[in-house]
Each structure stands twice: as C-alpha cells, then as structure tokens.
Amino acid sequence: MKGTLYSLEGKVVKEIDLPNFFEESLRPDIIKRAVLSEESKTYQPKGNYRFAGLETSARYRGREGDYGSISNRGISRRAREVLPKGRFGKVKRIPGSVKGRRAHPPKPEKKIAEEINKKEYKKALKSALAFTADRKTVCRRMHVDIEMPLPIVIENSLEKITKTKDVVNVLKALNMGPLLEKAKKNGSKGPLIIVSGEEGKPKAALNIPGVDVVSAKSLMVRHLAPGASPGRIAIFTEKALEVLNERFAKVEVK
Image 1 (cartoon, rainbow, N blue to C red):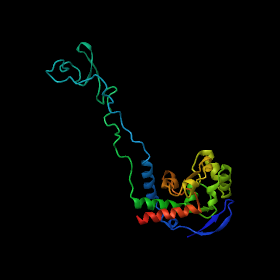
Image 2: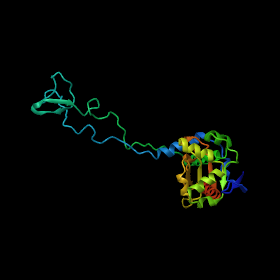
Image 3: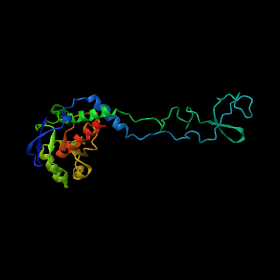
Image 4: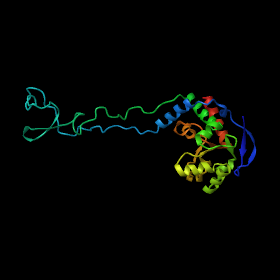
C-alpha cells in the first residue's frame, strides 16, 4: 500500500510504502470491545464503609422469655436502640431502618476490569489504524470533507516543534483548520498526532483544544476511536510508522 509523505508546509515530499496494518479488515465490533476493556481498567473500585449502619447501640432483644425482651409489647421485633430505664429506641442496623445498612452495597473486591484476549486486542488496534485510512469513515466521524490522501504522514521534524503557533500552522497547512475551529467551539475531538516516542512529543500541541498527542509505543485503541467510534483523523510522523511496525512485529514473535 502506497502513501504520501508531507512536509510541515503541507507539500508533497515523496511517495512512501505504508505498513501492512493499514490493510487490516475493518472491525468496529472488536474495536468497541477493546475500548470498553481499556476504559474499564481506569475505573476506581468502590464499596461501602465497612461498619455502615452498625455504629449504634441497637441490639436485638426479641427472643421470648429473655430478660427485657421486646416480645408481647405490640411492636416489631427488630434491633432497637438501647435507652435508659429499659426503654426501646428506634429500629437500627437493618436495611429497612433509618440510617440502616444497604441491602446489597457495591463491593470493592468486585472485578470491574473487562479483559480481552491479546490477539483480539492486537487485531482491534490494527483495525483502528486501518480506519484512519478509510476516507468514508473519517469524513463521517469528523463531519468534514477530507480531500488529501489518507492516512496523513508527515516529516519527522514535527517532533522538534516547541511552539504552539507553529503546530497550529502545520495543522492548518494540512487543511485541519475547520477541525480546530470546531473543537475550540464545542469541545469535540480533533486530530490525533502520533509520534515515535515520549521524547518526541511536541508538548506545544497539548495546548490546542481537541488535539491529542501520543507516542507510537503508548498508542491505544481508545485514542484512535474515542467513545468506541473509529475513524478519528490521525497524523503520523514517518518514524512513528516504523515504531508501530516494530511494535506489531514484537507481538507476533511472542
């Protein structure tokens, strides 16, 4: 599969060979599973307070024949507060009482992370990358008409930019102006910039609304398909494609 390499000015530099993962089959169903799995691992486990509803003097005194029993008093036999002079207070402890325990509270030991098979996740990531090269899906997902060939690959010098205005100029040169305006106006997702490594991240791009920057090693399915909806427009540096190719090759060796 052939692709086009662009300069920072948006001009065609040369034709390049694209990695095979851009030819992966389009599987939105597997992508959705992968995104849900990724997001479930970010959830905070939660549970109720261990002694919720138990910090009270209430105790059960309903057994017939016991000293101070509540039986034959015309009131329900429930755990009640202990009051002076043998009086019975309000019902406590049970779920049906005021400030009582919850019947089935959330438990912190519950497994909330949704696991996914490694090979299935690898296929989902490849499929999400392939969606970035599918013009019809990208245009529908981003609500714009993309005229330039997809995927968008740019020179490695993008990773050395240190000023926000310079990154904005590069994006505008790639006809991303409407997407930037839209993201600034309504907070929608804009272009995703994929670089070779953490040290190559143009931090200046992080100040642009809607624009995300991620290294090829840290790339996840949810970056390419926010909300499990594939087709986000992505900008790859030439070196980032090499790192992604190596990443998949290592997975295959394992």
